[in-house]
Length: 84
Image 1 (spheres, rainbow, N blue to C red):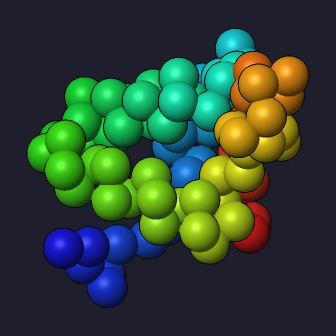
Image 2 (cartoon, rainbow, N blue to C red; image 1 turned 30 degrees about the horizontal axis):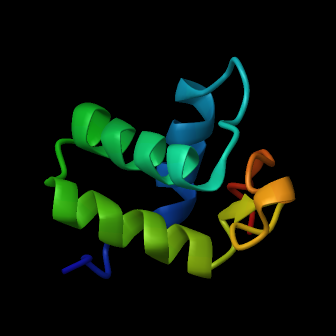
C-alpha cells in the first residue's frame, strides 16, 4: 500500500540523482533497477518498490521511450521526469 503522504516528485528526484550517470536501458532491466534502488536507498520492501515503480510509470514520472512488446525497441532508454 502506497501512502498518500509519499512525495512522488521527491522520490523521482532521488532516483534521478542516484542515476546521475544516465537512465537505464531496457524495459525490464530499468524496472528492476528502479525497484532495487528503492529497496536499497529508501528501505521499501520489494513488493512496495514494485508497486511504486508501476505508480511512477503510470503517472508519467518514469517513462520508457520504446515499446516493450517490440523486440527491436525493447532496449530503449528510460526518461526520469521529476516534474511530471
